[in-house]
Length: 154
Image (tube, rainbow, N blue to C red; front, side, top):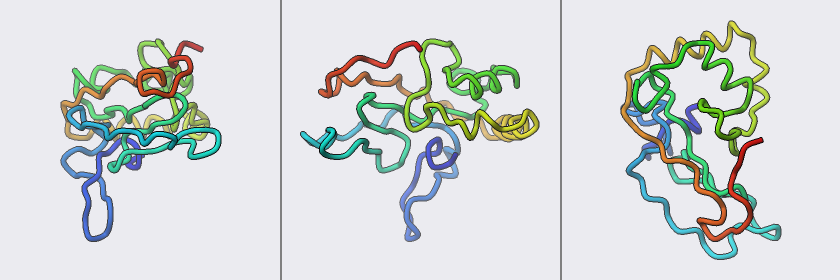
């Protein structure tokens, strides 16, 4: 999960999770680069990702890794274990406004985990240092020049 939810820093060993922002999601203050014309189409790539691997662009628009730290304002600090379990099993965001977007849409491997395994994950996330980071909302494809409908409800 570090690959999607922890911003990276670049080291001599390549990109590594930033120890000060573990599981904090896509950094709210990071500006995304432009999408090269023609980079995403049926004849070219199906998706791109940001250098820190917390933002993804594809036919669905732009999706961002969520803040999984126990920050009460911007993370999962106000969630119960039942909230956490329901979100991962349903593939719906916490407010039920939309389904998960790629690359997590839906991650059936996570949804199939046992309650005990999900509880271990939840307890781990709740043990982390809270990081205040309000992750941006997804950007619909028409807002980035890809056309098509915005991500919607199921």
